[in-house]
Length: 466
Image 1 (cartoon, rainbow, N blue to C red):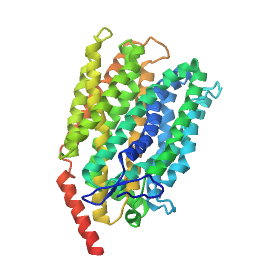
Image 2 (image 1 turned 120 degrees about the vertical axis):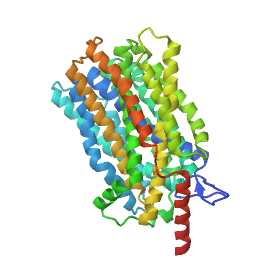
Image 3 (image 1 turned 180 degrees about the vertical axis):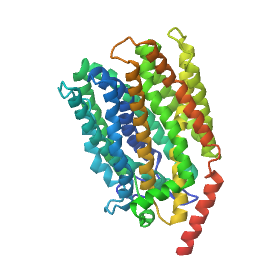
Image 4 (image 1 turned 90 degrees about the horizontal axis):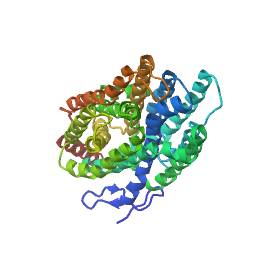
């Protein structure tokens, strides 16, 4: 049996439960959403802030670090409110999907404008231009990404199917990092310096805009979910979410891992350039890292079947933590086999550290529905997305501000204090954050068995109301 909904291509129906599910092809198209968003976020973290703004645009590191921080102040309002808005939307096309069409063009256009040289000479004028465009990108990415993520627990309703759909999304996100690290070589193809980056930014902007029209076509919404809109006032909704123990614990373990990711993303290019003295190896190292992540994600998906997601998360954290600690011993003359072996190990753990918390968020939303009778996917995903971006921006701003104080300067030579700081921030600090994530996940309350009981009680409630 095939089902169509809202213009989507054929969906599969599970023979046991009768639940509608995305087909494999539709899941692949759906994953393009995270590919585009993560291309943007990763390009901003890996290339834009620490390289383009300081080395090409010529901003001082402290001002470069403030550009994403200003954008996150905007996110403080727009991410949670976008989630809340999508919970209450009454468009004929659904609560979430119409926003893909609304935000796609501004998302691609603002990304392209971030890589344009405004031609200003004043540091504050340059800072102002990039901060304003960064804010526009923040808002437009929020318009597409928060409803996108809120659809996941609605389209995938059981414990393992959510992990599966999030695995597709995680593969898309990882390929997005590939796109981000390729931006510098792509810019070089168009010429040196600012003109090359402007051309690459335009190409990327168009490529990031187009998939959202296909995503709109293949996705669907469940009418029974949209009928259970939240009647809780906005501020009380935020407070109630932050009072939920499972959400706070999930948020804490995710943010510890997420800050480790953002720190590594921001520092790795500096680690290869100023600690190892092998800047030309950066793109190759990232390719090895990301290919390992992509190949190992299906293995993690299979291992997660019949196991608790928090357990899989802890194992992934432990593997990545050990590899980060090993990288502290790498030197310019370290053999490639040793260096890339540690990077492969990091890739094994990296994917699951981002994958599992998003898969676990759906169970929190089900628990919330059991207690409140409301479906608030937008609220929870908006808070999650905001905290993800805020944590990343804060750590990059603090790190770049610290390096600026220590004497970091544009060019190929840094003092020894800066070099050691880059080493520690690239290796030991992320390892410590991953250790914290392991501890935070040790007694996570919504296990596989606990979620099964939640679904059973929700089903009993539905049968009683029919």
